[in-house]
Image 1 (cartoon, rainbow, N blue to C red):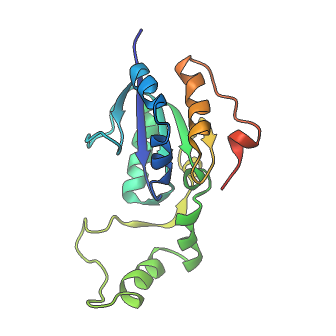
Image 2 (cartoon, rainbow, N blue to C red; image 1 turned 90 degrees about the vertical axis):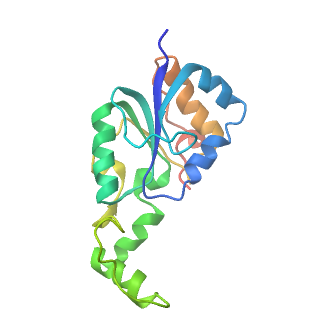
Amino acid sequence: MDKIRFATVWLAGCSGCHMSFLDLDEWLLELAAQVEVVYSPVGCDLKIYPENVDVCLVEGGIANEDNLELIHLVRKNTKTLISFGDCAVTANVPAMRNMLGGAEPVLKRAYLELGDLQRQLPHEPGIVPELLEQVLPVHEIVPVDIFMPGCPPDANRIRATLEPLLKGEKPLMQGREMIKFG
């Protein structure tokens, strides 16, 4: 039997969902026996998202041009895309910057108003990825197959989402233990 090609992606979020993923503890060994990890910020140093990914957990909202480019590539190359955690599902905490009214006020606030020694906006291309006007949840940019809320989702919810997928089944995302936010 071919192993499931598995990936995780970290966009605009705190990495708490990935830390919760690591809380799967011993079950990670069972998972590793059934999947081929083809892309992840955890234990994988690949720079380019591959083709033919079966399952991908996407943590974080879409906040900048790099996130936007990556999520389009992820969707194009992934069979089952899982919006992983509240930031991916709703844009959550990263979207708090939306209240400032766009990218320019965010940059001015961060680099000029709150800067301490050398207050200046980044002016070299590539230093800071171009910010989008708003931080958006994943589903507002690309279609999502499964929503797994939680800040972060606990290890039991992550396992209950992944186990059916390993058997070729769709997880049942209902009830407080599977869809509670926060």
